[in-house]
Image (tube, rainbow, N blue to C red; front, side):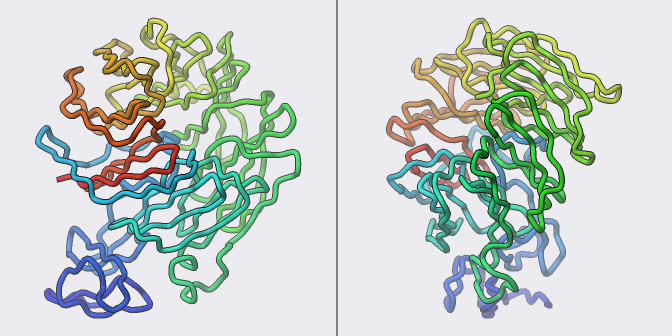
Length: 422
């Protein structure tokens, strides 16, 4: 396709009307339009490259549960003068425990009722509704145009191209399905690698990791863990880390689907809190509320060891979030910020409300929503918030998402608010 300076093709592959100018929607098919930041030509939903100039498109969308892997810092410009305007919102009046997903052009909401809504990123219009057996408790993944969902019966991969465009797809709506046994259930959010889907499955009093082929859903291998509860998975390079209720920290080589190292903390790991990492330090919360770290470079010698990370001073920790410079602890009365060495930078009780969800960190900026529904926006240098704004009415929030130009906030009552960043 040759790009003409004053003409654009509709991004809908079933339409491709020539647009006179950069419109928000195609006048013929009403497809929402998104444009390449490099050459300004239209982009198709879920695209990773510009079909005109070949530009690699930004990777700041959220296609899985937050903090399941080490990611590079987001290249997003946020300053003290940044303003957030409410763009659109939706209230579904049901339960939603899975964090939303956002990929190019769409937002996916996974409801506990078994319904999955695919919304237009621009204005929240429903593009497609999928349904499966409830409850849907964990965040799905979007990978290679597949939406992969954990259900009560198993793991299902939906073809997003078939869902959005129907007869354009060669196959059906379901690309594949992996069936669980009657005594098995998925207990944590899914994780995708280049060619695998990793699933945490509980059976009786034991948990196992199963590795599925991403294209076919066939079982490749599995690992049995001597525990019934684990943390969320955490992926760093080819090593997968997981903490267990009985106090073990385990490292798995995903290329071999093999445990390569483990260490025992001497006390239980709090499996309700996801591990995070700061550079080479992987952080877990133990049962006594203290934060401990293990150094991932030790895996070169196939070993792991634990050491204390800072002093939480008896905080009732609810969640951790981190980038390569800071750790933010959400706790029973506010948040505490630590540097990468474990030294406390500051602690604030805000309005003394509990904060259950993970903070959002981008460079030196932090967003957090307390359990009363108030959002606080901080610069890391000061415990005094730059912005305080009510976004929800007394409902526990889910982790917020920031893309290049949007802030997505949601809660467990399936209320979603999309703010535009100016």
